[in-house]
Length: 584
Image 1 (cartoon, rainbow, N blue to C red):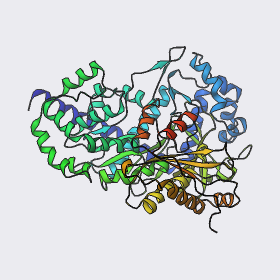
Image 2: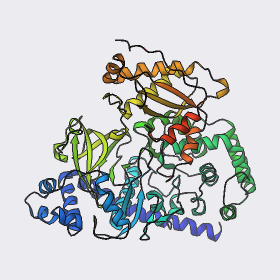
Image 3: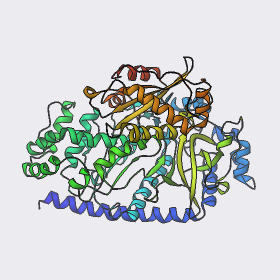
Image 4: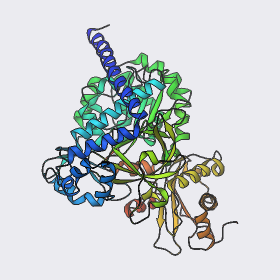
């Protein structure tokens, strides 16, 4: 063993011990908080009010008076109205221009834009304290997974598909703006080599297909690789699809230590990455037999200790699960963290219920709007102690990022309680409801009918790779337009598929949503339209979107330029189902 290899082994073991101490402390603190969740969450509210009481917002809304009241939570609710992002835009603009003490008392170190795929992009302030909250939560997820899956929190490394973008911009005051995940990765640059196989030099590659190739190039030699993590499940699917399509070139690069000429890399990126490669023809020969066998359960065949995939899989992302399962087999696939740019909301604590999240009492202060009240002019909220199992609520948070009684638009279902801590299941986002005639078709209902389309209509003729829906209201009657990408070769396409699929989706939507059925029978809503898309269409659309780590295909597409792009990528012109009523 060389001196460098020995040093690396010692450094990894030391890091592993330090991480074990940190994660154990985080786990014990979380479990203690869970047993007295309501009290712990009220302490969080008190801390936020105390810290920001002398801000412009805190003075205007009487934070100090609320703290002095017998029940600070009740006083806070009386003094501060429910809010949404538009209520903060002017204040955030002033903060971006350099004004301090507007919404938060701490200096803003970063502005993180939201994905902006479903509407106007948001700009979320990040402070040192809010960043620490996020880091603490990420450490906690590692601890929890280590408990549930032996080896999950070990020193074994994984592949992270988060890109450390170097294309940062700044506000007029010089405050950096960019992707929040990438910012966190940059701040943790010193420990990245102990967590992930991809070198730092390769984590800034802009071209997504080239970046996936590089991730695999450094991941394949890591025999002990134990996970892949990404923001969304489709990124992991694209990684394994790259392996399936380009494995001969990957083996050639491993054998020769040279990169393919067609990778879209800057000259310095190519030089820096090739400098890290050492020709290893023996490894290439050892990997070849497994890759030649095919790609069913390829993850465990290449990496015997492969333990989990961490990525968003709930709601609309469930559409990727069947494809992903083909690559990774039965290993756990779940999103360890439920949250948004504004705040971390909950963590997954039980692999048997991968779509349930235990709320985090230290991350932010929670309130909830019962689903039946979400459209009220002044909806009432309930506290954690008033939640009822089985009911649905919209999440409302108060956070260190300067959002007070802020409506997340996320609707969750209370699945149960763990040590007194609510466990919730994400249901849908209020902004992604299809609602052309008061029928309110939810994101989950759309995801369910797409899964039904794949299992009951396609029946082995292909798999759904991705999809989105547009609500077309400028026509009479208004209708839904489905854009669906299959893995089927367009040369084998049957032109009748559009009409058959439209009819199938029409029937399934009526079965899933009684209001849709009523509106269809009354001819208030028209029949769906289906556009099947060219293979790779959604990947090309994602490549054009900013904020690559958070970019995702919106399940309800509203931007005209996105709709125009998708229509232009159709394989055949749509065939609209003849008018008629849905069966009674």
